[in-house]
Image 1 (cartoon, rainbow, N blue to C red):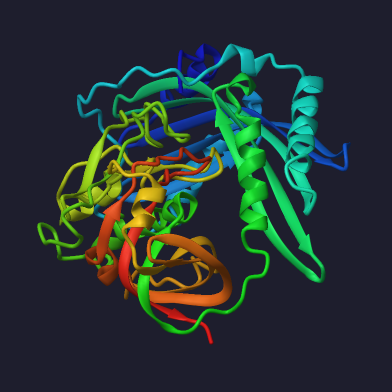
Image 2: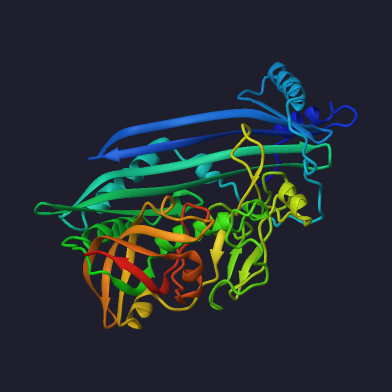
Length: 450
């Protein structure tokens, strides 16, 4: 968020001012919009420009919570939402930990979330740069076709007020482009992708996105199933981002409280290689999901979750913190006005090493570069830590990248993989997701192919 949104704040303030005796009230008011463009064969295939607005109200009384929302900011509708939330209190289950967040004195870290150039960027230019991305991709290798080229942006304005003293508002916008490719060689076809993010379209690196999309597809042409063995894997930055994202649920304080994380009861233990330091830092302006407040209006902050391999902290909302007798880490999450707060990591980042991917590969006698994975979330159990996913990539032999391989699985456990980390790359890639990426080397992983 950035700046203030006075009209939305006024709406939230008016709702909270109607609190009765013994009531806690939270009003969450938002509006926003998005643009989605898809180009195929030089023509506009898909265009969406949509906006929405609404209000969500929580009422808590005697340990019971009622919630209601509406997709409009009409005063009559807002009055009805408040009445419905009050009615729903009677259907709520008593919960000794129910309650709203309380200001904790943590100062917000000023950041730039709103880009005026993006806010006023003409639609015809958005279409033109997406066409340019497709054209650049097609010009790299004549074996490559473009499945689709996309432009996406979004903006949002939010205000929150509570009877406990929280009063915050702000706005933000963001954008990215992506391209999906197909590489053909006789009867074989392989897929690839590339993307670029920025505060505004002027920050896009279209040539880099095009090159990566082409290379990811063409590198896999001629791929075969590799022999089964235990080996060292090098995760490409995009795959590392997915790997880090999986850890989010295991570091969730609510899951830990319910015994749904293999990290439960392990605070202070050595859970990863000493090289591994993982932080959740939405105050880092480079993070795509950077923010200055969480879903309850508390200041976002940098939280060190695993430091030099030692488990230091779980992330908490005010509710999960009360359950475990601790304090919020500013990690309440919210999908919008239609939902009440949850808890989760906001912007996960692994402290990088110093080596390039090429340097990391040069140190490996026998291994595989994992370029893409499939079925990652369905193949990983955050409670047991079991890990198994389909993969494709390139064999590594005597420090050089060799033959492409596909249709194999890599398997281990998350617990073992964290302890088996050999090296962390310095090739940080900021992605349009809640986790950034870099190359990550892990030994003793089972590769199942032929």
